[in-house]
Length: 322
Image (cartoon, rainbow, N blue to C red; front, side):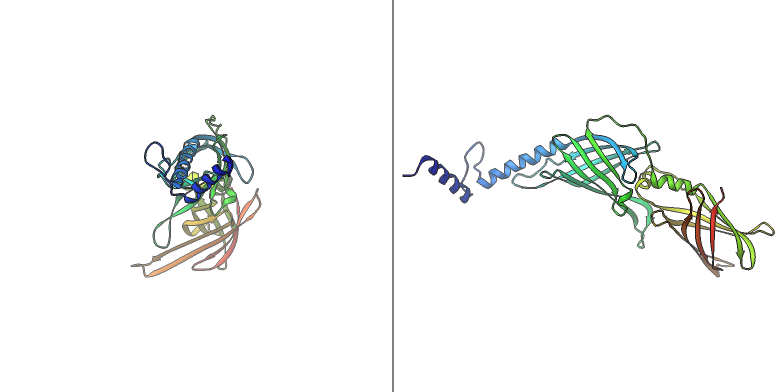
């Protein structure tokens, strides 16, 4: 004769194996699978609710650990989980606000995910950089906001960065309900850009058999909150740089070529620009100029090693003069 414990074990095992037996209770009858699915639904909804809120802290540079700005993240969890579905990842969205002394910008990131077991989350978004691709569509820079969010301690640890330039990103440790930090920021790509754009570069050398002064000057682009947010993490600038040839004997400018939309990549330390058009009556004399440069010199005396091509091709090294 089987003991009471054995009888109870056999009964439970049979119920688990069949899985289709109805469980009675309030409402409609449910199978064992449906019962556990409902419990999982409830856990997902509770997790979504537990991670919602506003988290605040300071964004720190991955390159030098200095503050990049005050970071505020408002998390929204998806509590509309269909009954009977079993998911390990909840859909989340976030309003990501970065505030510095210069600007404040909020990014709305949707269709992210939060893993209810590992507590990992990830939200991807993109910011247009004012350029277009070969098909004429706006070019957008991809960002990733990812890390872990503990539903018990209400702390977020993670990073925000350009997908293609991760080293210029920032790290953060945010706490729900914390006070906003002071706006003390460091902007590695931006500070470097401002130092370069504020200088004039020049060299005197022989061009086409005569002594000429080659002067290179950057025009500062118009600042926008979107652009300033992007520039914190993205080391590429699209600038207008003009190159002027001046005959030193008479002090007369021979020509000035503006390379609009030249691409300056501070990561690869290169500058590339092109300019095309047509001169003469009815535009019968087409022309095309290119400028290819590499940053050189020192921090105190920056310089550019360049190759100019067009009506004539020559190399020059222009140093900062002011």
